[in-house]
Amino acid sequence: MVRPGSEVGVVGATGSDDAAGDLDEQERGQLSRLRRWGTVGALLLMLGAGSSYGSASPIPNPVDGLRIIGLLSRIGPAALACSYTGIGLIVLCWVLIGRLAAPGRPRRLSRSQLSHTLAMWAVPLLVTPPLFSRDVYSYLAIGSMMANGFNPYEAGPYDTLGDADPYAHQVDVRWQHTASPYGPVYLLIARAVVTVAHDNLIVAVLLQRLIELVGVALIVWALPRLARICGFDPVAALWLGALNPLVLFHLIGGGHNEALMLGAMLAGIVLAWQRTVVGGVVLITLGVGIKATAGMALAFLVIMLALRAGGRWRDLLRIGLLVGAVAMVTFATFTVIAGVGFGWVAALGAPGTVRSFLSVSTSLGVIAGQSGLLLGLGDHTQAVLDVMQPVGTLIGSVIAAVIMWQCWQRRINPIFGLGMAMGAFVLFAPVIQPWYLLWAALPLAASTADPRVRTATVWLTVLFSVTIMPNGATIGVFVIVQAVIVAAVVVGAVFYGLRRFGLPAAHPPADLAARPPR
Image (cartoon, rainbow, N blue to C red; front, side, top):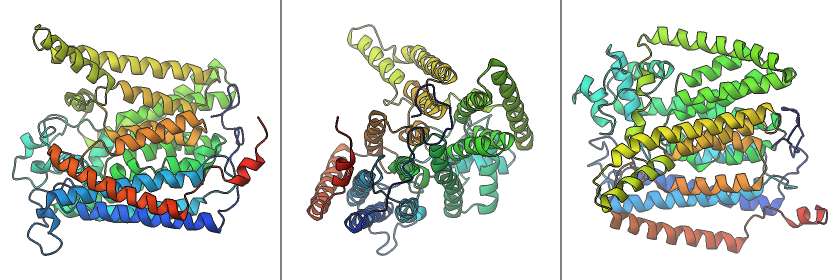
């Protein structure tokens, strides 16, 4: 993080580590082994995806009945064991590769080595059914509604399209009857996908994933540039951000529209800071038109630009008016093009109808409601949630406002502040999905070398990577236990083998010798 009181955007405030050397021969061998085992993990995840236990496969599963390819579709527990082993190998290799990208290391990964690693691990996930969630089918059903002239803000896809639609009956039952919470930009994208794919579900899923790859590419492009703006090591930012298992599992494998939202948000900040304010604001607003969460970036961008302009209140007002005007014109334009109005505002609370126990406000509300039931006061869980969830959202918003003030006072780097504000908003939101961690992790990856923040982000990534089933649904506990035991044995054996060959060191001897005495 940029030192308190230092000017935002001064490259080198914390040292960008551009002087770090290349990996030596031993470290290149360690990297090669980790990349290969991570690729094996991605291939196992791809293999397990042939079953409804290992992916959110279409109903009916198109590989059922096929020789060899369809074998695992009939052996669900084995497929889940493959998937969990793949998840474990990718997470293990990612953590160990992080030692070769540690901030301050005298020899570290190059950007090309890290990008090649991301490509090796991502390619097997490009051809699988959706992983960890059925949200892709929801996107496609929304696109089908748009293509057929229906307004996705007025009713759910199943209510409008019926079971005969190739997309509507694939939607998770929780979202079949809810209006779309996505902005007009994403509705236009979804309509384009369905228009091209027609009724071909497999083609539509692959097109959707291809579009989200554009967002991942924007993330890979923006993270090192944001890191340089913050005076931080670009490679360390790419490792924690772009190579993050949650990016692989959920943005690429899951095809979530967070990829486009986050890519537009981060790239827009870079564009506004380095080239054109108007172009950057337009790009961020496109992200808002996908998911409203990206709107928080506009507030922090205003602070960044106002600080660079002199840090006076009139600078804040002038830039705020410019950014606000460009954002409103851009959003209004796409709203008119989509032709469906502003119904997404009312639908923003739709995800909160699902009880997410990763959410602080939801967990406290459920605990309080169930406690009342145990005390004989009746089941008032929903009533408590109706109070706790808005309070949680308010607390998250207040924390974000306080962080903005700290940024304006030059006590916090605005990029770091954006990550912290996003994290607070996610933590207290009514619902948390594992991929929501990326809202905070990506800005933090580019803005801070604080080991406490980075360690917490790593551990949360590991936790969130294994908290949701590969099929995005419920699986019997005994089957899960079997799969976890198999995965633990295999991953443990791989770790033992890697250790025998030598594990990378975050601070090799040359680094320790170069450090000044405490």
